[in-house]
Structure formats: structure tokens, C-alpha cells
Image 1 (cartoon, helix red, strand yellow):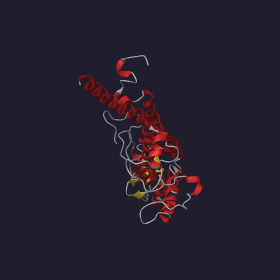
Image 2 (cartoon, chains in turn purple, red):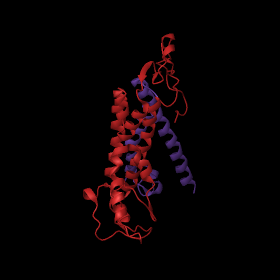
Image 3 (cartoon, chains in turn green, brown):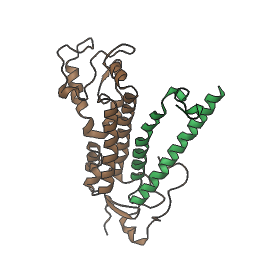
Image 4 (cartoon, one colour):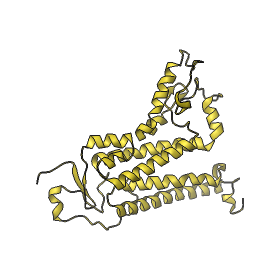
Length: 75
Length: 206
């Protein structure tokens, strides 16, 4: 697989395939929509809250991922 | 105007929760059904599609073996407690578990004459299940690999999300959102919340 070394399948964290991350997509959609819809009644507000939740969770996980990559790089 | 505790207002939308316990029970039995009973059709449809599709996707990823009820030494399937959050969809596992129990001998092994119902749909594995030994659970892991793990997670998350939905059917939206205030019907004509405001910055209310 081409691309940055840290993204190669052989050196990827825990040796998992990057395609494994696709499992994340349906989960984040469902979780965000349900979180949004259990806090609002108005459809536009549900969608806004869902987008906000998805961004926040993705960002949080991205930060954790970045930290782990740095830690892996250091050791 | 008499105060009706079953009527709330959120995001400037009046919501009649009707018979709350019945709505909560329906929401557990079939995700979204409680909201459909309350005539909250959009949210009911959304919950039904999101939760059931997640649950079924997880079920399929795990080859149909990730949802079963068992509380035996070596196979304490605590995951089922969360998976059962989706209600009727997980109930066949209890029937299968009861049948398996009848065919389990005193040593904790499955009797030779055991045949699961419905082609093994949601049936627990043959017993005994012993960690680090070759048994039916290890075969499921070997066949489905990561799908078995992810299927278990998907079905558990779907069950957990439905708990939020059950609460929403019983009591309305979980937290008072900054974008709209929940008000008594008596105060409804005195002005509402800011419908168009953004959700708050920082972590969402979870």
C-alpha cells in the first residue's frame, strides 16, 4: 500500500487495516442523529446538533489518534 | 387553562406525550414506535431507521451469532443486557436460551438430542464454552473475525441508543436545549426560546 509510512497497513497502529475505520461511518451517523433527535423537536435543530456531535466526536477521536501516533513514533 | 403534565413545549413545538408509560414501553418494544404513538412521526421514523439498521447491520456482520442469551461459566454473555435494549428484536434469544437450558445436563454440557429452534437463529453456542479451548464461540470468531467483534459492538450500541429514545418517549427531549425552553402550556403565549440559535460550543450534552 502506498502513502505515508504511518498509514501503511503493516505499520498502522495495532496492525489493523485502514478499511477497518469504515466501521466508524455508520456508527457516527446513527449516534449523532439519535443524540440530536433526543435533544430537540425541530428538524433543523436536530440536524445542527447532529453535525455538532459528529464533529466533536470525530475531533476528539482524531486528537486521541494523533497522540497515539506520536507516542508510537517516540517509542 | 388546566395544566396537562403530558404536554410540553420544546423548540417552540408543542408535544403531547400522551400515555407516557405506554409510549416508553412501545419505544422499547420497537425503536421509534413510542414516538409514532405520540404522533412524532419524523422522530419516530428516524429512530426506527437508525437504531434498527445499526442493530441489523451488527447482526449481519457477526454472522447472526452475536445476539444470544447465556449466563454459563465461561460464557457470561453480558452483552445481551445491552442488546436487549432494542426490545422485540432481541427476544428470540430468550426463547433459545430457555430451550438450551432444558438440554443442558448437570455437568454444564449440551445434551446430544439438542436441536435449536428456527435454524439456530439467536441460539446460544453448544456447551461447555471454555476459554482458550476450541468450541462453537471460537469457531464463530474464526469465521467472522473482526465482524464478530464489530457486530457485537453495533448491536450493543443500538440497544444503548434506544435507552435514550425510551427516555425521550417518556419525558421528552433529554436536556433543556439552549435553543428552546421547555415551558408550561400556560406560559406558551408569553414568548418562546430562540429557535434559530446554534447549539452551544464545546462538548454536546451527552
